[in-house]
Length: 436
Image (cartoon, rainbow, N blue to C red; front, side, top):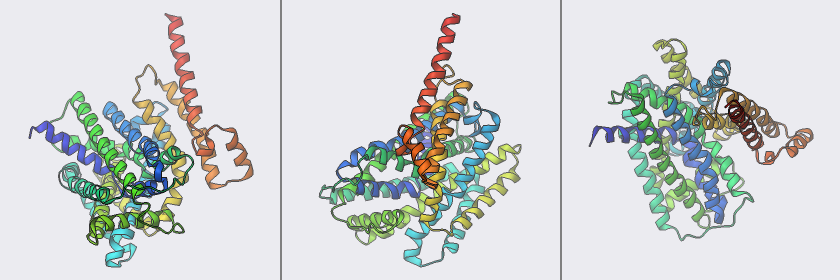
């Protein structure tokens, strides 16, 4: 194989695997199950926040070729530092431990009956070993782990669809596209894109690839992003379709929490399509998918703080160890508790992240520092009612939400952000025209 093709495949597989974790596997089937006949509309909404926005994040990284700090520096250096620290703290405190909890509850406990503490300790010991061997991360994940994960995923989806009678139930949501859009938040993929994109850039520099020039790196990252995005699209669409078409064959207890419904549904689909062997396949699949995501999160956090302290290797090691210790501690909570903590955090940080991604792929002509500041400030302001509505749904908050377009769908930031962008950009263009 040509060396450039080899680099492209390794980077694409590595990127896909760093994206694909617990939520990515568990959320789509239940989404399809509940969408029923509207599963295609749900898929479209889900793809926006779980595929399109994350891949745009990778394209922004390809353009910037820096760190997460570069995403927000046009707002201000202080804002970017606070944003970066917040993102990495969130990543280390929520999605990273969530991967360990999912591995324990679905893959380990049903088979071995171990305690969450033992599972988390072993799990994050493995994560730490990979992260401390930083120069080999992309090669190991891209060459070995991801191809195995993709083969298992495609096998489960393909066999399940071939075994299905292709009958769906009635949709449980009146707004399937919006439901899919908001469920995409739970994958953490937009946040993952700004975190693992930096990991990919550092890995390209470390892994002795024959890629040195800015243009070559940009091309490699962009192509890898598109390939990984295509892979995510196929897998997500397949999982949602499988959930929809098995809605008449599998009954799940709706009294259970969403996380247990997701796990039971996926287990039921695996057993229906692969027999009892499906349980073993599912366990291996979840464990590998979760492990690679946790590795990417911890490595990304360690890379950032290392750069913040003058490329200190000691800071890298200390950050990695602390992140893994945090994972073990938070990993003692159940999946539902972590999700509940994560929702208000996501309602605040996700819109900001989406806006930063979109602005960073635009040219300076449309995305000047003034545009960054104005749009981000408005997004922050209009994300607050969404968070308050979740944390404290009082009468006053409900009245405020009713005054903001789309706020009832937790999307109150969208129109104000768009209006601010076009207003500032338009005035800037008009100002240039009048000067000419």
